[in-house]
Image 1 (spheres, rainbow, N blue to C red):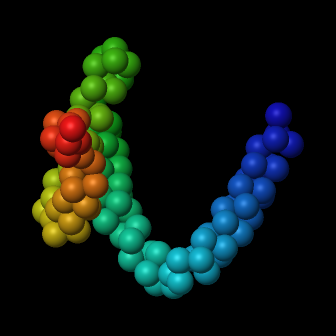
Image 2: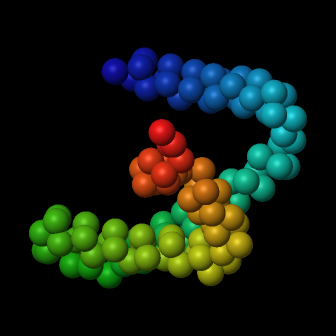
Length: 115
């Protein structure tokens, strides 16, 4: 099993790096642009992780794993969303609107058909 782990540890970053280079060339995306796109998720993830670890350190080990999991995940999810909406609201709203406009409801499509 250690051989599989080592091959994954070495092979995965190499394949991802190669794909990133190829896709970035196709999209004419710089490394700075790519990292800028990841910044909101990364900051929200770091904040959520910090909250989960903080909550985890304060919970008694005698509690059931299910209760501990629920009490660790809930504040982490809340903080993740709070960071995205609090710091990156414009970007989140833009993404939401892009998806909303791109997805049509079945009623809109039915109204477009004329007989």
